[in-house]
Length: 298
Image (tube, rainbow, N blue to C red; front, side, top):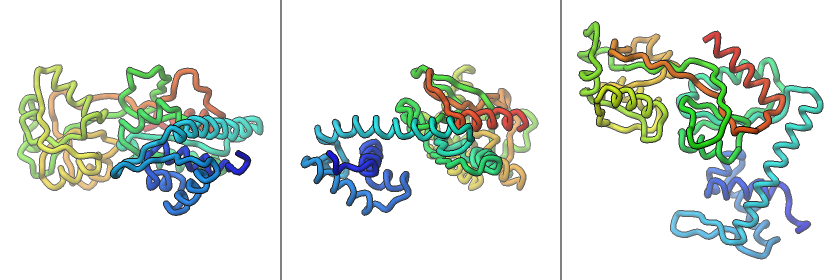
């Protein structure tokens, strides 16, 4: 056991969590061969295989499950220790780990950049992924907090609203509906609709509005990101609904138009979310306070 290193356990925890050497290497900013070599050494020290490859999928062996449980605890304790030591020094510095849904990528880097100018000793790690992965990370307590629009109902959590999230109907400037002064919701619902994938917060809110009015929208195309939706709208493939936070450049240049559809805009909030009972360290608390203050001015 004395030959096991903290780095090996850290690498193993990432690979086991992602079930992927590639994704773990990307997260830890290492090459895939470097990760593989260290885990081979860990398996050699333990004397048992930790992973089993079946087709293209990676599975944990029974020994791997035991090591994963222990490694997860070690990694969590090290993160807590780093934050606790920083707090004892009374400094806004050290690790800051945030995960955000893809729609938040249009504003979160700007907030983070301004925060880092005030606190250059902070070491941020920003994970941008879909809502399903953000919920997984929230449930596993992998981050200081996560940022999303729709608050999960199945987790006991603390959610802090910090900025308005306005959802608006959009179209290409040459779309026939652009000429209308008022567009009934029913007419809008009959257009070719570009939608985010099932599980997206934006899609859930949009579908709820139509359902409340007895309408059903069948997606013409399902696209996996707000950026893909925007490209589809600008290509004239159809209409959609997106957050204004993701549309600043396109609206400013006139490449996308907001339609005057009845029932819009939909007013929601962006939330910073963490599990109930979680104690935020000084750095995470400072960043959350910063978000709330900045969000009020938007």
